[in-house]
Image (cartoon, rainbow, N blue to C red; front, side, top):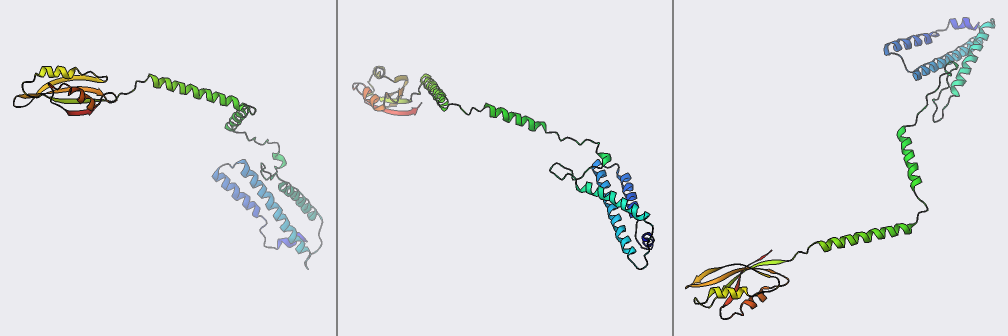
Length: 263
């Protein structure tokens, strides 16, 4: 009989019991496992049972075909066949699992099928971004007129140019001016210096403004008139100023520029 033949073989038939005991020991040490690890342990147990049953069948067939084999009752074979059939059904259910993009790769056993799977919620940020994109798409006018935009842009450009021209017109222009210190020398010490200064100040030009003055000794009792004036560069030049002062020949011998500074 096949079972008697298997008794004499040195095979560890109870290995799965020790594996289960070792798994329970480590589960107690490490705490409870997640639902996915429990499903994997259940699947591994089923696969071990299938492998063990196939190994027993092969060894039984090998023993029954040997020289010392004898026919036995059919009760053991029928029980073994029922066990194999049930394991084959479970194996088929495992192989027919959902391997799609969103699947887990395993089909749940009948006792776990009442548990509803978790829904994967869409992130709220993604929903908000999608709604904003839809609003932007709705706001785009595919049939808008380019002529209206061109007219509006031209009107804004003209308005800005007009405002710039008005602002520039209100802004006072800077006038270039210079400060000049003149040395006016008389003919001799008998020249009336007060009269000489009056003659110099009598020169009136557009853009000319006279300032302070003083008498500076030169030597031998002769003094020169040092007088300050401010001129606009575009209207009054130094040559014109010297020409106008030297017209008073009775009092003025010469005119020199002692200092010239830009304002």
